[in-house]
Length: 234
Image (cartoon, rainbow, N blue to C red; front, side, top):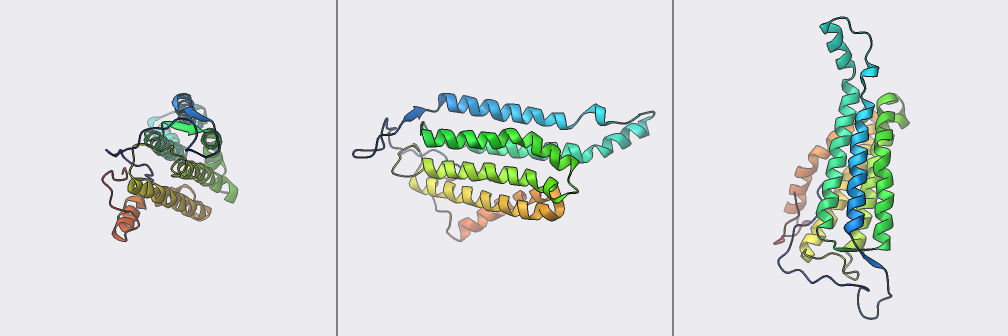
């Protein structure tokens, strides 16, 4: 699920204001507050996940064997929390790596990020639905759909930022930007596959993301990923 380039030694200097002479003027802002806001939302969403696991869900415990049985019954809920937490962590890592090379943003990126964060704050809710109603088709697919929408907005944001005419990405070679775009689309395709598989196997569909390293190797061998001095972060 990696989709962010590492730094290039031949980076262009950041540009203020419009993308270039003759281009329509647009608002260009520092990323400081956007990054702080995003970090906070990710942190709160990840923390709220633990509310899906509570001692109130345990029944009467009269012995060690009862205690073990009750904890075992909670295993699916704990697994859902772990899966959601790991996926949120990966999404946050992608965000951090991408914004190492986006020193300034325009209003489009700000709003794409806001809508992405809306998806992030819904993750604890869709995780709860997946836990309580996974016997129903909608109950077991809303969480994968939630992550698919987040990845879709993240991919859209990266494509917008890395457009050569906007000059928003700084410090990455053209090959690295291309590879990051390929990585974003690959992650999005995997996420769509997870949605389809979840209709049949539920949360186990998230194991599809474990194929990401093999897919990256295949893309390199077929030339889809280009050789770059600043290789796509793995």
